[in-house]
Length: 319
Ligand code: CIZ
Image (tube, rainbow, N blue to C red; front, side, top):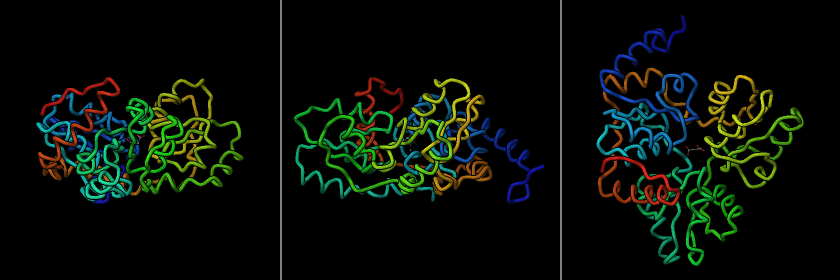
């Protein structure tokens, strides 16, 4: 029998989580980058926006967000009538930390009239200062939909912004932020992985660096990679250029295909902070509640809703 660090068996922990989940009327959501055992207990896995939308649409009173802080905030922004719990409050996002609300106000003063497009990997305060949010799945669609006479400030991910500029032909004002995990994927590592498995399809996330992205066979968000892999014939081999957590879901959903990490270093330490014990404690003690001040929440929600309107998929949520 396997045991958690506290000596309690995993089976016992899972039983406790199951009971508490029902007692609290809770839904557990887990990001595609979470550890396998957390993905396996989740009611839903997906990207940050998918998860927040699903959570907002359920009748659950409590959302346990297994992910990082901005994901908990996005859930809280869309579900003010529910209690959102982040099992490990220290789980942050280095990319999100690249932009502060004050810096966004400053750049807006520098480029008056420019439209601020902000990646969902950002704090609630930064979203509140933005005109429209985007995800890695819809950044191209969002930017294409913006009045061509307007300048666009794209925050906080330089690499996603650069990719989006290339796909849309728009001259974006880019921010100097990046995801340190995706930035770790070097052209040398790509060459090495390709040489080892020349037959494999190389999938990459647009948070990877431009020089690296130029070497990909397919570029997409985690949800896009999941869809793409499903569409390929049985026996296809893939090299996965994003956080290794995604491979668990890819393998589970495609037992007839093979998936290899592009590099063993593509591990986000923040995404790996939550354990089963943390989920149990979170439900037991109703900790740690994610709260977004109402004034910020309303403004941030407007930026998220603007994105959903652009993509024709408004969300049903309270407040
Ligand atoms: O938006 C997300 O959830 C992230 C961080 C990546 C992705 O492509 O799903």
